[in-house]
Image (cartoon, rainbow over all chains, first blue to last red):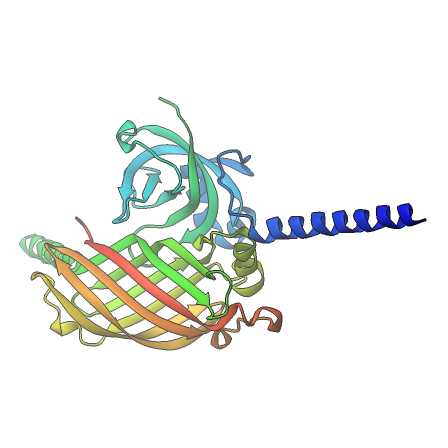
Amino acid sequence: MIEFMKYKIVLIAATLIVIAAGAYFYVNRKTQSLTDSKADYKISAIKFLEEYSSDQVLSDKKFLGKIIQVDGNLKAIEKDDQGFLTFVLGDLTTMSSVRCSVDTSLVIDESAYPVGTAVSLMGECTGFNADDLGLGADIVLNRSVIIHTKN
Amino acid sequence: MKKILLVAIALFLGASTNAQDKYFTKNGTIIFDATTSTSPEKVAAVNKSVTCVLDGKTGNVQFSVLMKGFEFEQALMREHFHENYLETEKFPRSLFKGQIINSSQINYSKNGNYDVTVKGQLTMHGLTKDVETNGKVSVNDGKISIAAKFSVLLNDYGIEVPRLVSDKVAKSAGIKVDCSLQALGK
């Protein structure tokens, strides 16, 4: 009987430890890199901009918060004061773009990506800035990772 | 024919002047901080894809912030921010439209730091409120930087902090704005 009670206490304690550890890791888990993620949608930068420009509400429902793989020509790589990179994709002749903020944990040699290169990036869609400030319309992807360079 | 040409030249020159008076960025930074003194960890998020346009002539300034762009270190905090508090699926964009009221004191062609007062309206979580804050405009070899810090009462924007986490999440969030602008058209 005493042996059985001991076994029961150990079992309850072990269960509580497992639950507490699980809760701790659940609460403190870090935001994951998208390197090993699978895209919810794969789309070209031009088609992506067309969809958002024609119906923002519908496109938000479809793309907002989703992981998007976007293919397109590189218009520019912008580097801010803290060194964070943004790959700007789209039609070189228009102001509208898909702007991919690169995951800050990645080290990227931007000289390997000249303007005009066909690139493919994957990131989380954070939405669409319509052209109401006179700067062109933009779709923004966050935490972007480079999938591959086509040529 | 000559008249048409003159009008076209005048319009072109007018447009050029306007473009040079405007400065912008699409990579501005905003930090949202709702940490309390008793929070066990920082309740803060950063958005590095803020769009800002400043008209040097009128002092008009506009910000467009995609709310899904706020990133937290902790995934659970991120989920709560987007799904429960700011409801970023429903309200994906925040806007600020305002004016630097002492804009005439800024010389954009001369290096210097200028203390400014900005007045305007902030739309967040579907609600619009008046905001007034002090900030700084810096001119350094043609580069324009703007910085400001202010607080917003979450309740003013219909954002409710549940009692269960009221010791961890502040009722008033600190907003820190930092943007390096470039001349539009350059």
